[in-house]
Amino acid sequence: PLAADIILSMIALDYQDTIMAAAGDQANAAYEQAIEKYKGQYILALEGNVPLNAQGMYCIDGGKPFYEKLKQGVEHAKAVVAWGTCASWGCVQAASPNPTGATPLHKLFPNKPQIKVPGCPAIPEVMSSILTYIITYDRLPTLDSQGRPEMFYGKRVHDQCVRRAHFDAGQFVESWDDAAASLGYCLYKMGCKGPTTYNACPVTRWNNGVSYPIQSGHGCIGCSEDGFWDKGSFYDRLTDIHAFGIEANADEIGGTAAGVVGAAVAAHAAISVAKRARDKAVENKAASTNR
Ligand code: SF4
Ligand code: F3S
Image 1 (cartoon, helix red, strand yellow):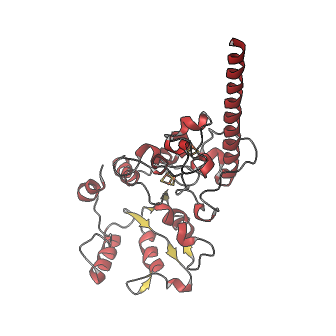
Image 2 (cartoon, helix red, strand yellow; image 1 turned 90 degrees about the vertical axis):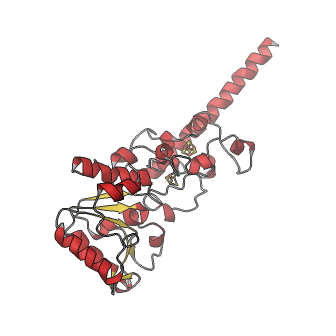
Image 3 (cartoon, protein in one colour; image 1 turned 30 degrees about the vertical axis):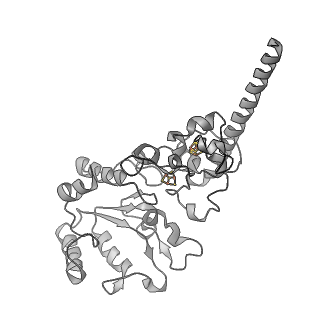
């Protein structure tokens, strides 16, 4: 369903300060009334993270640190949803040295049932689908080991990529303006992080299914992964460590083994290139035999 359908006909959106008619004290009253009226029944969804340094003074809402307001809502929520990479992992506000102490939801309320929906930004269709799932089945969707819905984060961008056939064929873009770039070849050598990123963007795409970053010509920067903002250049190629089964899922690999997947990809890329060279050699040999 479209976001508009969700808001207008599927849920009671009792508090959302940027689109609700109320403002100021009236908005805060709506927040408190919703908590009271639906105690233990409502879903609290947060976009953005919470700055804790300087007693929370980097984000004041209604005269109080935002953390105070959030805590009040989370306490009585049935579950919480972290929309986007900021709420899920911290994102650029938490970039080293993180001067504001920006902190994601799961670190603040580790014991509350919660769903992470990372992405910078999160995909609208994924957001609406998760709400629809909760409303339809009255339960949270199945999550992976990192707390993300498996149905949208169970596969790597690399596994669903429009350029994957070029990766398998060893056809890579070597510079942004080469012929391979015009032909839509694989962006692995340009630093694409698709092999270590779990997200549904190659399937849902953006702007009503028009495109997604890789289709538009830029490598994936891993915008849905924890720490992507502090892991060096977006244009550094994933480096090798040891061979690894490249079709493993996030749970099997674990959060810290992203580099290992990179290793497998590097190995796979090398094999693809070697295979191409071998095929070429066979072709040349056949041609010279025929001559
Ligand atoms: Fe697609 Fe990037 Fe994988 Fe190449 S390395 S197939 S561009 S996800
Ligand atoms: Fe983000 Fe990579 Fe998709 S940058 S939008 S996860 S292609």
